Amino acid sequence: MENKPLIEVRELTKSFGELQVLRSVSVDIMPGEKVVIIGASGSGKSTLLRCLNCLEDPTGGSIMFEDEDLADPKVDINIHRQKMGMVFQQFNLFNNKTVLQNITLAPVTIRKKKLAQAKRRALFGKCEKPIETKEQILKEENEKAMQLLARIGLEDKANVYPSTLSGGQKQRIAIVRALAMNPKVMLFDEPTSALDPEMVGEVLDLMKQLADEGMTMAIVTHEMGFAREVADRILFMDDGVIAEQGSPEEIFGNPQSERLKAFLAKVLS
Amino acid sequence: MYLEGLGNTLLIALIAALIGIVIGVVMAMVNYINKKTGRLKVLSKICNFYITVVRGTPVVLQLMILYFVVFAFWDNGIMIGAITFGMNSGAYVAEIARSGFESVDDGQMEAGRSLGLSTWQTVRAIIIPQALRNCLPPLFNEFIMLVKETAIVGYVGIYDLGKIPGLIQSRTFDYLFPLLIAALLYLAVVLVLTRILHIIEKRLAKSDRNGGGVGNGK
Image (cartoon, each protein chain N blue to C red):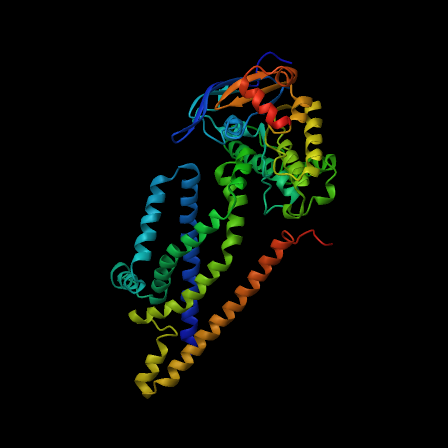
């Protein structure tokens, strides 16, 4: 593990109008680290995660990612989001696209745009004419998407629309859709909360595989068993701050604060 | 004569519908992006002002203003009629398209943005196709309304289907049959359009059930 954090959050605050949801959160996420965020609903854990890729604009503080402050409105957030995969509670697959198109849409759109820009620059003699073509991009991304689908055993679903899939299938596709961008970090916002109990396992298994491959992950979840097994570090959020953090052994075996004890008593019973 | 009138009516309605859809969708999009990102504030204000004014005044007056004042130099009555109704219908289409945009789940936009797509890229590839699908039936209804409403262009002397009975009356002094024929022609057109609407609705419902229908059930 390198010593420089991948994401460096400093004194992050977030308010929705009068309501202050995050009050000064500071946390580092190291490359390859699996950070699980737990806490009661309304404690700000989802908001913290959504601030990391600026789906919620932070009210104050800084988020350093690859030497740039994502909280700065002048930074082109789209470029950074391409390296931060996100998985939602409600899956959010694109309803008007097939499974394959869901996976290829973002990489194809973004690569095509880059290609068009490169062509324009080449036209003015500023650089070499790009050698790749749109057809190549499409072919490559389709192949990559099929490999990702093969990995989760859903190649046969490539050309169907999301509405025909089960929740577990949707969520696994949402995960590989994010992976298609080759992200440096994956953010999971309660990925199993909207699933039927029998489908939770397949999604958690895929997440465990990712963890074993060394993916950096930040996960908001209520699955305490999963947290204990996968997490390098657990953050306990309470009332907009990180009330306690530590290894799974410390958090589950030796909770310090009364709030954490009460929370664990509730979720583990 | 009736056929010429009918042709003019349909021509006006068709051009007006195209203009209306362009104006309406653009305005709805501006408002949607404004609501989601807070940008395009001034444009959105202008759009809302336009919608308020157009919806708050009778279309006859709008027609007269455009015909006798704005386009006073231009003698192409059919085009002026089409532009008037296009601008008028644009305000209504904007409202239809707004509800179409709002019916798309917020998560779709978030998913697009989280993958690194820009707002516009997401709107184009994800939001517009879904919104359009949701508001196709009311849009078509608006077109049916348009076909009938265009009878107003007779006020400024354009020969559309609604104007023909008056012309015939002035020659034959027969009131009942010219009006009846015109009414039947309108009815026939509207029935055909309604039929098409039903087919579209059925198609949409079907693809809703099996999620687009492509690649399924093979």
